[in-house]
Image (cartoon, rainbow, N blue to C red):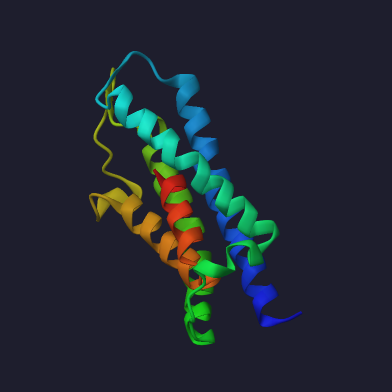
Length: 160
């Protein structure tokens, strides 16, 4: 197995694990959420879809045929890719811990809902926005693992 294949497999694993965790909690919340007052307008949601879908397609293209996006590759040294492995693997339990602490208060869309509560346990006991730490760790890991700026931009869309 070449180093590039190893880093690619780590990228795919980290990307999918992160996405599955976020999707699981998103679905869990959508089942239990009561009445909500959404603060994002239709234009914001439409723009998210307009730009998000092509970026997500680019990430999936990169997963299966990385050479398709070879024109967006960065020339990163191998030691940076190893930092990407560490950050990516560390971001998985962190995002799970954050999501678990948030419980039904999690949302990818800004809103206020009935029975909204302030979370003060788990990582929120020490940091007000630990999800940002997990998200940016994962984003930096994707950049370092892939060495491709377009796949990193695509991951940015997935995080929001």
